[in-house]
Amino acid sequence: MDIWSDQNRRSYLAITAHWIANETGSLRSRAALIAFHRLRGGHDGKTVGEIVVNLLDRAAITVKVSTQRRLN
Image (cartoon, rainbow, N blue to C red; front, side, top):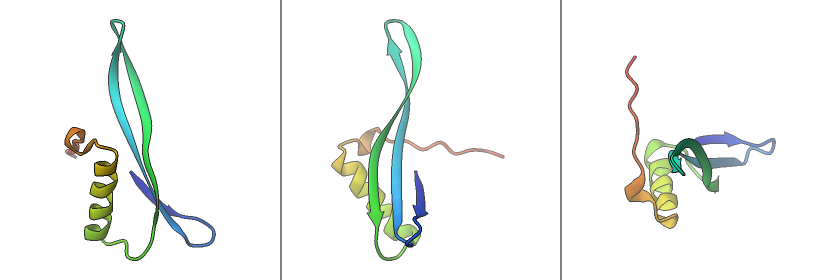
């Protein structure tokens, strides 16, 4: 997921999915764009979190999403 602003200060959020697919006995890395959304209003954690969950719900993949916590 990433958030950025264009030259006119309009903010956007993109969500991508990454997975390993087993294609005829061979593992392949795959990726897909799940959502591209114009953000309006605040960018605080609560607001962005609610938007992300809504977009994942709309894509019907909320239960398939997991996060990876990186240890330093």
